[in-house]
Length: 123
Ligand SMILES: Nc1nc2c(c(=O)[nH]1)N=C([C@H](O)[C@H](O)COP(=O)(O)OP(=O)(O)OP(=O)(O)O)CN2
Ligand SMILES: [Zn+2]
Image 1 (cartoon, rainbow, N blue to C red):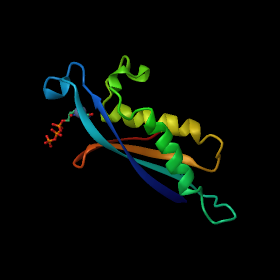
Image 2: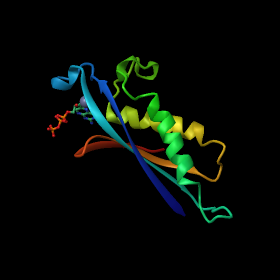
Image 3: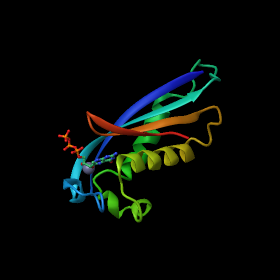
Image 4: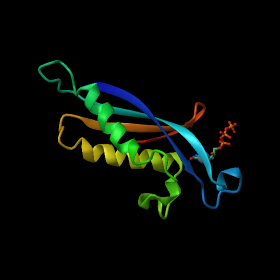
């Protein structure tokens, strides 16, 4: 098996409804996102999938989150845009976009709020 990793960033604001503390108020993060995919079948170039394709897909997904108030995005209408939920959202969006690459499976997505704290979603 092979695992590939790409990382990218986005900047946005959010708040955590009902959180008892400062995060209940609107504040921003420069989020770091790590996408990991896996597969066993390499193509004729001996690659699983071009990093360029993975980076493009991740960038497209993050573009929808960049410079937004995340709580206003319909997906987060009834749930908090926590790191956990953001990782879940990004995982599902990337999975959709990778559906035409049957040899590539989304393994996990990790969203870091800060250098010290992050959440991972996987299925
Ligand atoms: N499990 C989670 N816990 C928290 C989340 C989250 O998404 N998942 N989010 C927050 C808030 O977004 C908050 O912005 C984070 O605040 P904090 O951890 O205090 O981060 P700081 O940047 O202030 O870092 P310090 O290390 O405390 O200086 C809270 N929890
Ligand atoms: Zn926050």
